[in-house]
Length: 226
Image (cartoon, rainbow, N blue to C red; front, side, top):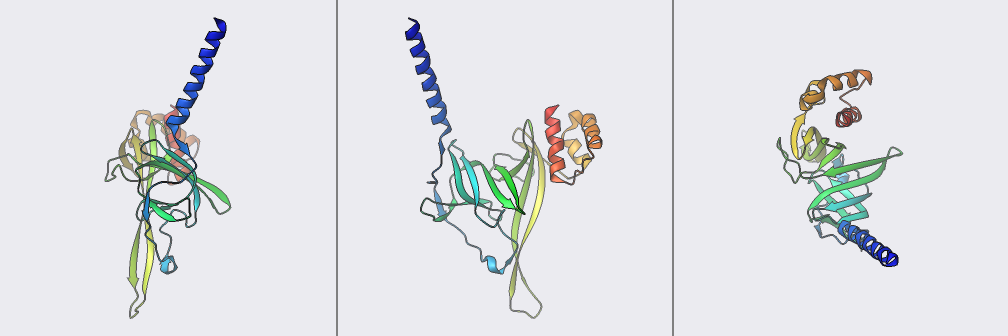
């Protein structure tokens, strides 16, 4: 009887592990659906339309739960889309619905890791907009970096100069609802009013500069720990 119970237990464990692995749907292939990519003439553009101008390593989580890992991606911040390389090295714009993606690259001899997520709404942000996750938890600090390309023609010149200009906005989210915040103490505390006294003390004790992204993230992470 004991042997039968042991065999049944091992069988159930194996089935459970198989189910968990299957439900995650991890894959290192990049057979995602894509379309022809919009190419910028970067020679004549000042600035870059991309988060990082070179290919970077990324992981993409689709809305259906499928996770593509270890793929070559770029993030187009003008069009707010992901560019990826297919299995045969074709460059495509990803058209499948994405829930979240992470990207890793080297900048100034340091590794940069960023995560972007969709699904939030409020303050002129639609659920289809990618937002960078600065601090995660019951309350989330998010950053929206959008870029636009402007054409300029100098006085008495036939040459058109193109320039990428970027803007940054910050949000605090509870659940999937956003509140836009400024990089000031009053604005951030107003978005997290329940523990404002604790946050005031934490800001002073740690000499936080809330115009700095990392210090903003530290404050929200502390708020989540309370």
